[in-house]
Image (cartoon, rainbow, N blue to C red):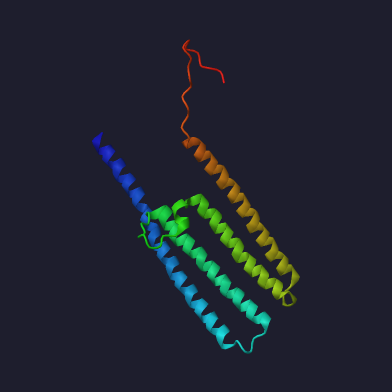
Length: 190
């Protein structure tokens, strides 16, 4: 009996330790974050060098490209910090600068935040397409609009499911009141 209990405990320990297999994945996302920083700097350098020769529309498109890189970078940060904190190990920050959103993040809220970030990124791409609409084929713009609408519908669905789940969890955590029994032993009717 003791050996089977030891086997179960070892197996449980291996399962719990398997969460650390995600750590290299988050490190890979940190490397990707570095690539985006390099891309941002290269695009900013290009914008500054060509400032005199660019038209207002070109500058707007380049700035939208920079905003796009920043939004993707923010998405990476949410996944790296939030995912690591939720699925691998709790991050203990010093008092200096913990992100406000991290205290109430869970898998459900992360999905909603990620979907909102994807909608923001999709909005930037759609805006760039509207600015350059004379150079694009209309069916491609319609496809982009459909994909953007799909992101919005998905985000709404995720938010609804998240709200339902949180309400269900909160309901299950609420302690039940003991029934009041009058002196005759019968439960009191409410």
